[in-house]
Length: 528
Ligand code: CU
Image 1 (cartoon, rainbow, N blue to C red):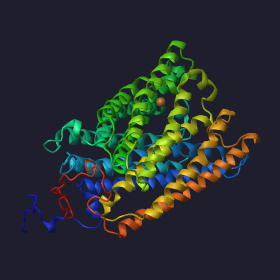
Image 2: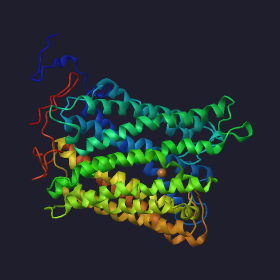
Image 3: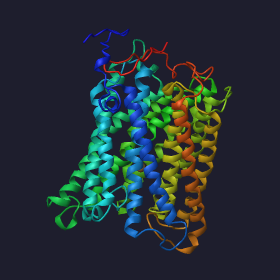
Image 4: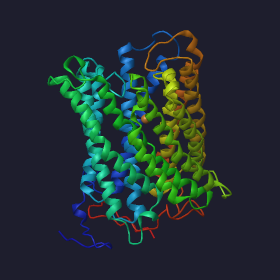
């Protein structure tokens, strides 16, 4: 075997390099792993989306149409779990893998082999989670928050869910350790912390959040497991435990989790808007401090999800005021994005459309969040469709639209080809219109008193539900355009120039080298 050194000084022994499926199983290349994360999350998006269409089909009109009530409950629960842990979180980790090394001038992630393992834990976890549909008693059905004591009573599907969550949590923690270590130790000379692209900053902060709260979730579900099988009574009042404690522990994880799903989205939008406004980001330092403030505040607001459990008024006031405080740094960010566009020479290619769309609809979700945060109002809308409307404005029009924006922004870099702009714009407009048709009516349903997580409803809710169902199917079908754009872009098309976004700030379209690591399986040119 003749080992030669390639132009980066690495051993480049082609006889060594696995091909086909083995390439993907053994890869330590951050770009390969990023690609796998993105395809995994897209598969989960379609899976979770299919469950959502099952929900909307049942709710098209009153009466029981398609499913047993128990199965309907599994649909809502699994939709939530799959979207949160399978679609949104891994998608952002995919972006981190692709972009962070390139943006800070590192050759790869710090722990390249652990990176491989972080990813490959996910498919088995997803299989475990989805297989819960096929065991006696069916999939978890108490909501994605798996509140005790409901979750202590359920069949073996819950155990599969708990195990899957444990594995996905381990994957997230390893991914985060990798991201923190890479950012803190592997920046190119001259890349000081306050010069890092904002996407890198938001991920650094997100990774700390993940390391802090994933173990809390692990603790909660471990206590759940021992309550279920080993005779403990952590959440069992009859044995001296407290079911409300489960909610406290869950939301101590759950609220920072909300920011885990939105801070990297802020990072993407902060890269895209300056590029298409042809101006540097307004208020870079304040963006960094605002992101950090949001992250810190996210630890002291968790009980705004539980105003109605009977906590003291002083507690309600504390969690209400702390929550409203988060509007301040979030407002700083929205102001900075708008100020970046102010007097910019803007164009509206698909990435910019999704980012500006994000600004409008995510802000809507932010405002309804403020409304939910006001304790006396929350008493009226707790567990209604108003809450469903609120968090879908944050997670679909927020996280998902930012992921679309970032995909269109960076896919020329990822594939070497330009995507089809016409199809991209169709994808944006159809998504935007159908998203609002789906979720805007839910505000009215919630205010009128329709509870969430029910398979049937009173006839006065019919019109808005029909509208929402039509919107949901339209939204689902629109995503096939996205799939078509991606596949076309991978297969070929116009060759992407070094910087396809003419005149854009070059910081985020980094020109720093990203040489092939030792275990790279393809020749990767140094980007000049
Ligand atoms: Cu919250």
